[in-house]
Image (cartoon, rainbow, N blue to C red):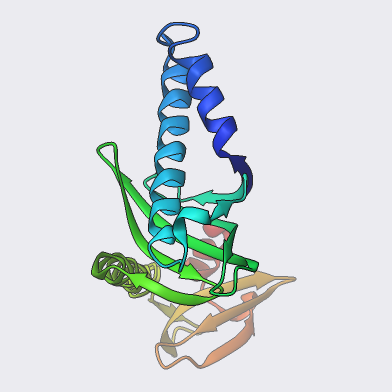
Amino acid sequence: MRSVSLAAAVLLIGLLGVGCGEPTTPEGKQALKEASDELDVLVASEKAVRQYLKHPRDASFGWTHDLRTNEAKDLYFLKSTVKSPNDFGAKLTAEWATIVSVRDGQAEVLLCTIDDQTMYRSPKLDELQAEADKAASEEAEEPPPEPEPEPEREYRTWTDKSGEHQTEAELVSFAMGTVKLRKPDGQEVELSIDQLSDADQQYIRDQL
């Protein structure tokens, strides 16, 4: 949010445009376009507000405005004040706000409120809101990333020192002379490396 004034916008356009010749740098051209758009927004907003005043010809608008814009700089949110006489001639100050779309150099008021009362709301504003809601919904509904596949388990046949007993299992760990094996059903067993066959002992050493 920042404060702008109609006079400042006019002055900036004059400095960037007619006063110093047409800007040649991309930054200068962008600054001129933004200043021109802001001026269009201010003019369109005040014109819209006047339609809902009882005595629009006697209205005096504040010079300072609170102006915000979206990232694309094609939708402006403007707030300010206006003094206008009532039916008894007393000048009252009202707060007004507008939402203005600027596309292809054309400013269009989509919403106008005075003292928090909606005076005008364009159907286009509902369309923009629906598009924003849809985009937010699609972003929220993006499927979570697929989990990484578990590494393939390397089951092998283990044989004890006597050669009489065998079991299918994977090697989980080996430390301090103790071997931990895990069977396909998830059961884990621990045994001394000396209890295994020479071939199995060599296999364990190869994994280190």
